[in-house]
Amino acid sequence: MTITERTAQGELGLTTVLIARERRAAETRVAATPETVKRLVGLGCNVHVEQGAGQAAGYPEGAYGDAGAELFDGSAAEATDRWARADVLLAVQAPQAGSGAGLAQLRPGALVMGLLDPFANRDLIGTLLERKLSAIALELLPRISRAQAMDALSSQANIAGYKAALQAAAALDRFFPMLMTAAGTVQPAKVVVLGAGVAGLQAVATARRLGALVKVSDVRPAAREQVESLGARFIEPPVMEQSPGEAGGYAKEAGAVFLEAQRQLLAPHLAEADVVITTALVPGRPAPLLITREMLGLLRPGAVVMDLAVAQGGNCAASQPDQETVVDGVRVIGAGNLPASVPFHASSLYARNLAALLEYVLKQGGLTQLDPEDPLIDPCLITHQGQCRRADLSPVAQEVAA
Ligand code: NAI
Image: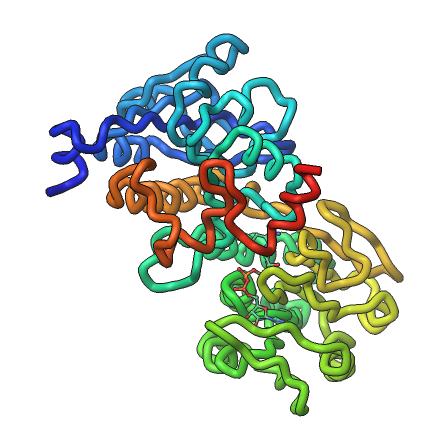
C-alpha cells in the first residue's frame, strides 16, 4: 500500500510540515520549493509555508499556494501558532535562538531536519534536548547508495565547486582560456585544486570548461582516475609508511609528517599556479593545513586562493570565513556559503534531498514509528525525543546540561 493510501485510511495520520523563512545572515536558500511541496502534499502532509520563505531563492508565494501549501504571515502570533502545530520543521540551517518564533515553540517529539552543523552549534543541542525534540542533521547522512537522493552535502558541494571556479575566474587578473588574437597569444590560466571530492571535481570540471590547465592533489588513490577523466593532471601524494589511506570512500586523517611531506610536494605546483581552489577535508576533523602563510609567498602577486574548507578551519592558514585577505599580493578568499549564491538551483536540489528523506521517514510509519537504529537514520538522528544519540556529541550535551 502506498503512503497516500495508508494516510487516506487514517493509518499514518496527517503530518504537518513547516517551512519557515531562513533568518541567518546571507542565507538565501529555502528548504522546500513548490515542486517538493506538491510531492509532500501528495504524501498526505499539511504543508505550512511562511510568506516570503522562497523569495530570495526565486520561488514566488503564489506557486507555493498552487502546489497546495498553506501560507502564513511571519507576525509573532501567527508564527508561534504554526511552529506549535508542526510535526516536522524543514530547514536549510538551524534556526537561530532568540529570533522570534523558533525551536522553543515546537512541541515535544517534533522532528527538525536540516544542515544543522551540530558540532559547532551548542545552543541548538541545548534547545533540542530541553524541548525533547528529534533532529536529523543532513551532513551526517551516511554516503550509501540508498541515501544518494537525500545527499545534501553532495548536492550543495557540487554547486560550491562550480561557483568556486567562476568566482576565482572573476577575481583573477588574467584570462582562464588560451586566446589567440591578432595581438598575440594568451596562455591559459594554471589552476591547482586540492581535494578531489564532490566540490573539488566540480571545480576541476568547471575550470576545464573555461579552458584552464588544471592539476589536482588528493590522498585517495581512487581520485586519480576521476581527475584524469576530466582532463586534469593528478599530483601524486607522498609515498610513505604513514600514508593516511581511506575508509568507506573517505580519506583518513593525515599525520603531521605526511602533511609536511605533502606541502613540500605541492610547493613547486603552487609556485606556477594562477588559482588554487582548496576543498580538502576529512569528515568530522579540522581541514588539513596544505598552504601555510609562508607558502603563499610562492604564489605570484595577483594569484587567487579560494578556500572552500574555511568553515572547517581552512586548508590555507590565511583564510577567514566570508572575507578576502591579501597576503603578499595574493588574494585569499574564504568562501563560506557558495551554494547561497546560486539559491534557485541550490534550493531546488536541497529541497528534493529533504523531501526524499522525509518520504523515507514517513514510509517507516511516520514520526511515532521512526526507527532510530535504521542504518540510514542512525548516524544522522542526533537527538531523539530529547535524548542525545551520538557519542561524539555527548560532551556538548553534558556541557549544555551543566
Ligand atoms: P568530500 O569529502 O567529498 O571531499 C574532500 C576531499 O578531500 C576527499 O576527496 C579527500 O580524499 C580529500 N582530502 C582529504 N585530505 C586531503 C589532503 N591532505 N590532501 C588532499 N586532499 C585531501 O567533501 P566535499 O563535499 O567535496 O567538500 C569539500 C569541502 O568543501 C569541505 O570542506 C566542505 O565543507 C566544503 N564545502 C564548502 C562549501 C562552501 O560554500 N564553502 C559548500 C559545500 C562544501
